[in-house]
Image (cartoon, rainbow, N blue to C red; front, top):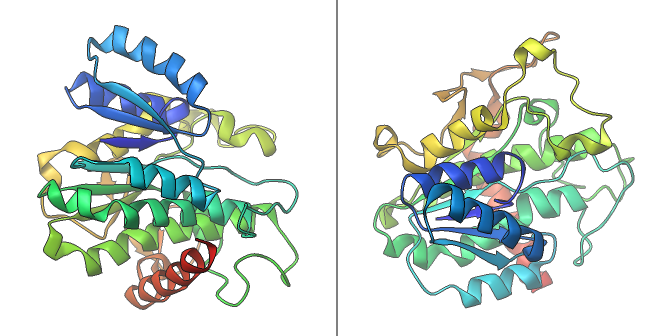
Length: 281
């Protein structure tokens, strides 16, 4: 199994749970030296020596290409976990894309597409994409996903990227079922991690917050549980399938926006992303 960003936050708890269950886990990390320190600790704590580290910078499609080209074995689960949130200023990736869209979605799209043969070889692989209730705050901005005309807003950019993560799972379900590849997305919940460093910390009321272990639980369920055999193209919250909603509530957001599960949107985004990575690489 591969966990992007698997050395910190809910990623390290996902890695820990999968390794404890006996999986060979590769942590794909932007900072491999720090990730190797975490992996060393996890090997000792879990008793599982098969925890590995490979460098991966999702915001740079050349780094994604190098990771894909170096991979040479079947993958039973790819957990697209890494992400950034609410960058205060507009930043662009090495290929000129808005940074949250590039990191949270486009890098994972290129990674997943590149690893498709290895997922297919596993004969029953799963792709898990970590989204957020942030997806309820905005759809895909089709004509300007990189904020070249729309005034940049940190949370709108985050919302778009997390909506895209859900549509990635819908797109895989539409295209790769013949390869035996299932894909689902999830909201891990409100967890205080370094993800909120640009937002002044977690704003969710304390009684509604989760621990990192609780936040990782839905990722682990989707990656490994036999209860999810044959389930694909869905969105999960609190280890259960979330209900689609037509509009966002003024209270705490719940459910999944209808636009994030729309098959026509998934097809359109797949085409857009394929064009973007082809131009960039």
